Every structure is written in structure tokens, then in C-alpha cells.
Amino acid sequence: MPNIVLFSGSSHHDLSQKVADRLGLDLGKVITKKFSNQETCVEIGESVRGEDVYIVQSGCGEINDNLMELLIMINACKIASSSRVTAVIPCFPYARQDKKDKSRAPISAKLVANMLSVAGADHIITMDLHASQIQGFFDIAVDNLYAEPAVLQWIKENIPEWKNGIIVSPDAGGPSADAL
Image (cartoon, rainbow, N blue to C red; front, top):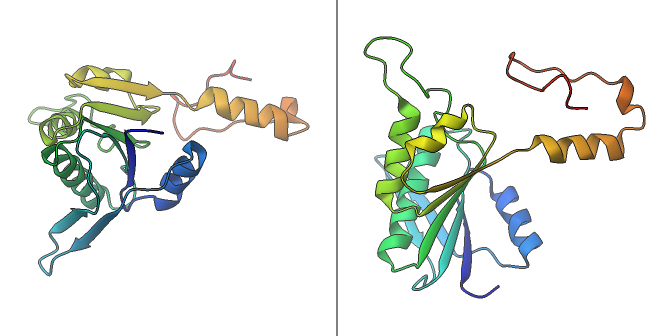
């Protein structure tokens, strides 16, 4: 695929490798490390001038470190003259903090949206946002993909007695009753 460079953040290298394999691409060269004071250092190991860059980094695990690493990677690619930077964020960090529910409470999902934009992201691809309103926090393109159709297809194709199954969710906003 011409003009596309795919980088992996450190949050989920296996996922990034599967995406690269599916697209027939090699992962871009990037080195991430920590300085002795725990600052994140990112070195992009190849030219991205004029390229469409995709960075896969999930907002799970060490959320703050992964978010900071993503911001630095976006900025590094942007100042290295990439044509466009797309952040692929399967699990959007701070998505549950999408509204002001108490006085003096921050809307942290909006802050993350602002940081991604300021870092230089041109496009965000994420999955199953906690609330669709988060897309409105951005002034750049956001694609919120839904896993439910693919999961339902997998269940129907791989579980012989799927009609007798039950789906359980940790909260009331989980699976829809008529999904299957």
C-alpha cells in the first residue's frame, strides 16, 4: 500500500501486528523508552515525509503512559512532515468522563480530544465509545466503529447452540436485548 506507514504504540503490539499483516504492511520503525525520570521518549525510525501515518495505541493498561506516548508519536510524525496522521484508538482513554456530573468536575474526555488535536492528529478511529457525544468534542474527523455486528456474526458462525445462549453485561447500557 503506497504512502501508508503503520506504527504501533507499546499498549498492544500484537494487535498492531495483526492489522499490519491483514493490510500486507510491515510495522514502521519506532523506539519508545523512558528516561530515568520516567519521561516518555519516542524516536520515529524512518521517514514519514508526505506519508499517511496510522498509529495504533489503545487507551487501556497504563492509560496515562499510553496516552502520552500516543501524543508524542502523533507530534513526532506531524513535525516530520507526514501528510496526515490517524490515531487508531480501540479503547478511548477517559471516555467514561464525558459529562459534568458534579460541580467542579472535569470533562476529561473533552480534554483528551483537545490534546489529540493539538498534538497534530488529523483523524481518530475508535471503537464503541462510552457515549457517542464524545465525537462532538473533536474538530477533526472521528470514526466510531461498532464491534457488535462482528461479534454477533462470530457467535452465530462459531457457537452451535447460540440461540440458547445469554449475553451478560457489566452495566445496563451493554448488549441490546434484540441483538441476537
